[in-house]
Image (cartoon, rainbow, N blue to C red):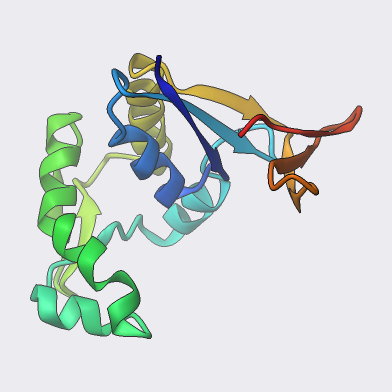
Length: 155
């Protein structure tokens, strides 16, 4: 029997996490308080969708404080790995003059988001919209609120 993973939020990090969990091992549920995924992702795309940075991994890790918090994770999934993954999804990228990584000119943020969402659907990720995380109940289960009720998710 698969174990269940519940991801709170439908932002870029949550989408990447959901895309990299093995669907043979995990039943993945993603809970988003809005009606759609990646709202901030799309807003960030207004000025050009900066996906990451091409600098050395050591410099990249230094951008985060404290460095040790994400260092291991960033070494396991680097900006280069992100570019390769996006290429596998059919999203070509390029490095701009600033060193930042962008989708190839002409690829809109909504196209990137739709491609990632399709990948998640192919992986059988289950989406739950208009579900807001409120904390934990007395037993430690996730406490969620929708328009009708507040309820606990199974552990």
